[in-house]
Length: 139
Picture (cartoon, rainbow, N blue to C red):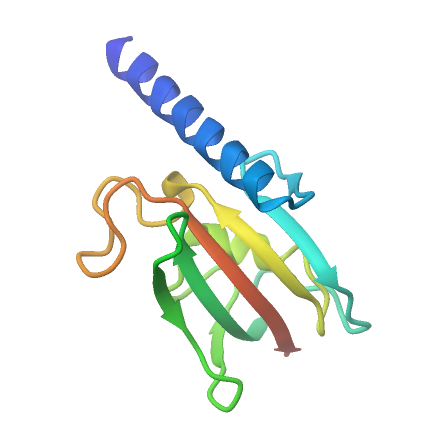
């Protein structure tokens, strides 16, 4: 019971931090059932992404304090199978909200990112991540 309540409190505190960040940024974002915030700011006209597809993206990722923690170049996009691979689970879910050619911002809560441990490099424990990305191709 204590652990459940502690986790519930952590999620609530992080949700408030994310909401404050969104408000301060002036963004109008939607929220999924799992807590991912998103804004599709450029609509493509391609197929909708589904688990099992190969997705090719270009992206920049940040902590909510503005520190950049990852990126790809337009000339060197990242390709991975949705539902598998090295990417954080929240990114897989987020991409299923997109069509090929879409550009979007996502804020992924820590429990769908690197969680309690961080990634031992740039991402500290319990950190939400902001992705600004383009879904370049689906296969």
